Every structure is written in structure tokens, then in C-alpha cells.
Image 1 (cartoon, rainbow over the protein chains, first blue to last red):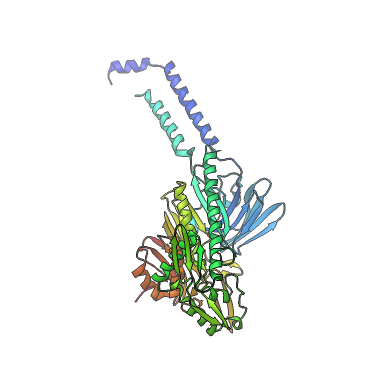
Image 2 (cartoon, rainbow over the protein chains, first blue to last red):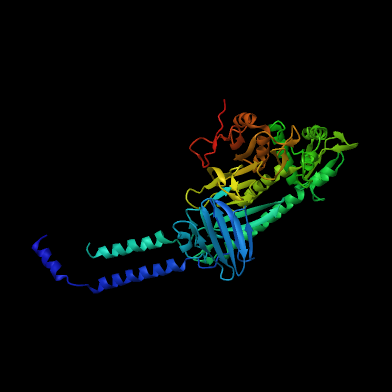
Amino acid sequence: MSLKKVQQVKEDKGFKKADLIIYGAIILLVAALLIAVFASRDGSPPEGVRVYVGGDVVFEYDFASGEYSVYGEAVTVTEGEALNVRIETAGGYNVLEINKSARTAHITEADCRGQDCVHTPAIKDGSGIIYCSPHGVKVVPFGTSDDSTVIM
Amino acid sequence: MKKCAPVIAGLILSTVLLFGCSPAKEYTLMERQYYFMNSPSLLTVYDYFYINGVEDSARVSKFEQMAQEVNDLLGNLDSALSTTYQTSDIFRFNAAAAGATVEISEDTYNVLNIAKSVYNLTDGYYNPAVYYSVQTYGFNGGKTPQSFADLPTDEEIAAYVELSEHFGDLQLTAAEGKYYASKPAYTVQWQGEPLSLKLDLGGIGKGYAADMVNVLFEKYGYTYGKFNFASSSVAFRLHPLEDHAFTLALVNPRRKSENGVYTERADFFRVAVSDVTVSSGGDYENYFILNDGNAQKRFSHIFNPRTGKPAESGVMSATVIGGSAAENDALTTAIIAMGQNSAVEFINSKLTQKQVVFTCESDGYKYYTNIPEGFYEVVNESFTRLEIT
């Protein structure tokens, strides 16, 4: 670098007004994008939930009608203020609690090692999924694109 | 350049946030359930039903319109093909005298044409004229036998088989926008009564319905979706994610359980499918078991037209992929009825344009498929490939 160039750089101290305008515009743009990203999430309550075991649908609950369907013998349902759904699998069990009025569903109990499913937040909108990997149990809200497997 | 660095960094960050995190427009699905032909069915369509979390009412309305049209279609088919509705085409045909001609709908005409075609292709292993046998074994409205003493005699079954062999004589005609089916003049005597030919299209109607819904997918311009008619026939379009394929998982027909809890996964075979129709059937659905001393005997709803009895070929299930679902629906019945050796010969000579999988009990559980290795996955080790010698 020439001596003249070094001298010029030394003279360029701090931010000029134009720089501040550009930085400010970038900060505003990033903030607007973050707001847009979070606002676009589907926050509406789920219409229902579907429980899969190993890709097999074993239980469905429809919040609108309050009706549920059990497929196979691996699921037992206890009705009360909330609906308690016990799912038996080859590896163990999970208990899904469905709060009918709040339109939420979460796993309250399981005998899997990690207990990740129990600690997964309740499904309360159209974007959540609860997955118990050791038992192959998956709880998904209606309307999610998780229906790529068809058993026949 | 030094001054441009933060600008470039900002633009890169903006681009990542805009396109990498959460697109404002993504596919969601809408579903509609139906119950026709004594079976549930499910229409699934993927579209941009929500944009930025807001419902696109035009797209939702379009789905509702198609869902209603599917409802009407299934209702009409059920009303035409049912053996029990007294106004249906098939009920009126069955009630008509031998040799009579009955006016039928275009759909019934189409279904019967396909039925005749598959009857000829399979050398009679698919035959919808097994009506009397199906009834007397307690399927489709008949009374289920509670013991071996309740089963029909060989003499009775022989009369039914003799009659069903005249299905090929059924004549179909179309003239001036109307359609007719003429019943064979042939009758057999059973218990002093003349019996004329009767039909049961349960083995083909759901497949035809799936074909018709597939036409509606085209009409409404939907690329992504599917229509399941129970576990019998499915019209697959594309899936919106990843490679646009659905995973077709075939049921293990002898899934083990202990104390009412399954100890095996539901499927044994997986293959990727897209833009294709599939039909599947097996002896694991709609059957009854009678105790024969120490042994149990399974009687399934799939009949061998040549014996007039529930199929006992050792083939437990069959799946046919590609072409018409109505054809495939009928072909699954024929493959189960004909048995493993004839089925392999038939698949390799007559079904080269379709993909077929069947399972059988032959020194353990076996499967056979003409799908090339590497394009499918067997997920249950109890099933090994049937070796043909």
C-alpha cells in the first residue's frame, strides 16, 4: 500500500452520513423480514389430530365434532374433561391428553427413555408435531403435509 | 469495497431470511371423507389454501366444489352398482328373468365392459358372477356360517359354478345414448328353483370409482393429491414435498399380535409411487374362521370362481400398480384365486405393463414382485422372495 493511500485511509474516520443511512435501511429491512416470517406462521387452532404408529394411523380426533376414531386394538380411550388416549406399541406406551375445549393435544406420560415426547410442547396450532422416536409414535394435526405414506 | 461489505452482508442475510426460513406460500392439504359402497374413502388435495396464514377463499371454494362432485359421483356409483338397493342397475339385472335385457347407466356399462375384459384376460379367474357363492358363504349380506355344518354342500356350489361359467354370454349394447345388459338365457336348478345369472361387482366398483375421481383431479387441475377408497384402490397424483412421490406401504397379511397388541409393524414392503393408480386385496380383510378340531380354517371374501369357494390358493394378498384401477381391482382377485405358480406365469406373460406384488404362504411367508430390485424395500425379514424354479 502506498504512503498516499495510507494517509487517505487515516483521514477517513468514523461513519459518514450516507453510511449511516445504508446501515439504518438494512436494520429496518431485516426487522421487517423477521416480523413477516413470524406473522406468516399458521397460528390457528388445529381441526383435529391424528396418531400414527410406525406409519399406521391408529387414532383420530376431530375437535369440531368431538368425535374420535380408533383403528386397531393398540389404543384405549378414557373420556372425561379431557380425553386420555393410551397408545400401546411394541416398545412401550404413550398417553396423549386431548383438551377438548382448549383444542390442544400433548403427551403426558410415556415409558420411553428420552421422554422427548413428554417434553414436546402441546399441539395447539396447525404447525406442531409430537414425535416419540423409540416407540415410532407420531401425533400430527390435521392439515399438515404428513400424509405421504399410504398403507394398503 | 470496504464500504460495500456491510451492504453485501445485509443483502445476503435478507435473502436467507426471505427464502431460507419459512416461505410465505406453502402447500397445505384439505381432506374430505365419504362412506359409500360399505367402505370409507378419503379425498386429499394439496394446494396453497393459506397464504401468509390467511385462507385463500377461492382455492378453498374450488376444493369444496370438487369434494361435492366426488360425493355425487360416489353416490351415483353406489346407487348403480349395489346388489341391495332395489333401484340399482345390478339389483334390477339380478332380479330380471334369464334372457331379459335391462337398461343400465353408462357407468355400469363401463364397469361391466372392464369386468368382461378382465374375465377373458384371466381365463375366468376373475368372475363377478359368483354372486350365489358369495351370498351362501355369508359375505355381502348373507348369513355367516357358524360351523362347518353351516357351509353349503358341494352339490349346491357345483350348481353355482355351472351358472357362473356363463358370464361370458352376458351381452352389452349401447344405442342412441342408452346402455343395456342382456342376461344369458342359461339357468340351473337348485332345490327345484331355476336360478339365473346374478352379479356382484364388489371386486371392481371401488377401482372404477378411483379411476373416475382421477378424472376429476384432471378436470380441476390438481397436480398434488390422492384418493383412497378404503385400502382397496388408491388414485395417486403427486406429493408436494421432496421427490413428489408417495410411499406405498403394503400390509403384512399375517401381522403378529400378543394380548391384542401388535408386535410387528403394519407393513412388510415399501415402494415409491406417483401419478399412478393402485389396487390391493387380501384374505386378511373380511373373513371368518371356523374351528376344525385342533386347526382353524380361514374363509375369505375372495372367491375362486372355478371352485365356487373362498380362495385357498396360499396367496394371501396381491397388489397391482399402473393403468386402470378398475382393472387392477379385478386383477388382485384373480391373482389370489389362481395361486402362486399360475400367478407368476400370468404376471410375466400378461401384466408386463403393470407392477405387481403378491404374498403367499409357502414354507414361510414369501413375496413375489416384477418390480426391479433396488426400487423397493422389504421391511419385515419374515418375508423372503419367492424363488421360481
